[in-house]
Image (cartoon, rainbow, N blue to C red; front, side):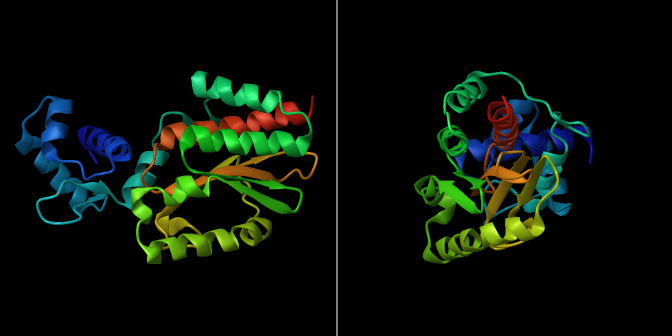
Length: 237
C-alpha cells in the first residue's frame, strides 16, 4: 500500500465513523486537494486489496474489517511499550470521575459509566466475578443495529462475554477485536476494545467498550487505556 493509499484509507475510516454513510470520492478529493479521478483510482486499488468495500452501486466506500485492522495497527499512538495517552478534556473528565468515586466497586462503575458518556458505546468491566455493563441504549441506538437479526447477534455476544473473559483472560494491556475477529459474536458487526488492569478483586480485571465496527478507534482506544491506568492509580493509593 502506498503512503497516499494509507492516508486515503485512514480518512475513509475517520469520515465514516463521523457521518455513518459511505464516503464518496468527491469528499476525498477535496480533503486531499486532488482530482476525483485520482481518488477513484486509489479507492479502486484499496477495494481490490480488500481494505474498503462498496455497499451498493453508485455508493461511496466503507471500511472492511481488514481495513479497520490496518488502521488500528498503524495508529501512531500504538507501540510496543503501550498506548500514548494525550491529556484532553475527555481524559481529565475520566480521571476526575475515577478519583472521586470512593469504594473500589463504585470506582470501577464510575469509570465504566464515564466511558459510556464519552464514547457513546456500551461500557463494561469485571467487578469480582461479575460483569458490570452500562449503555445498552447507546449500543442499540446505533444505525448498524436497526434490524432484529443484528440485535439478536449482539445480544448473543453479550450473553457469552463474561464466561469468555474468564476463560480467555486476554493478556495484553489493550486488546481490540474487530468484527469477525471477535471470539464470540463474529457476525454481530461489533468491535470490542478491552483493557486489563489490577484491582483489589483480581490482577486480571478488565474494562472496555463494545460498539459498532464504525467508531472513532483512536479516541476510544485512548480512553479505554486511560481508564485502566486511572483505576490502578485510584485503587492502589
